Image (cartoon, rainbow, N blue to C red; front, top):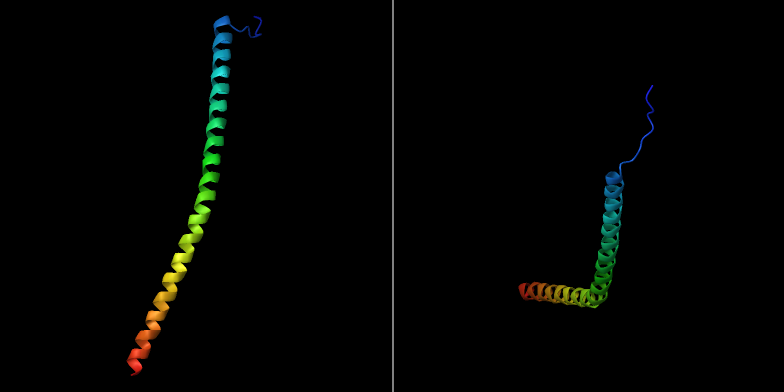
Length: 79
């Protein structure tokens, strides 16, 4: 019977090493991009936190004005 042990061809070794290096580079780039994205989201959260509170305050003020106008209209209808 023939020996079935696998002998790796040198070109296969080179290709395997190339692919491993390429995957490592892709992983490193992905981690860098992920870090940048998370950092920007955190920055936006900090800036938007203030803006978000301001928007909430404005919405609350508009709601109060609408309620006041509604009460004025009810009072005008009673006269």
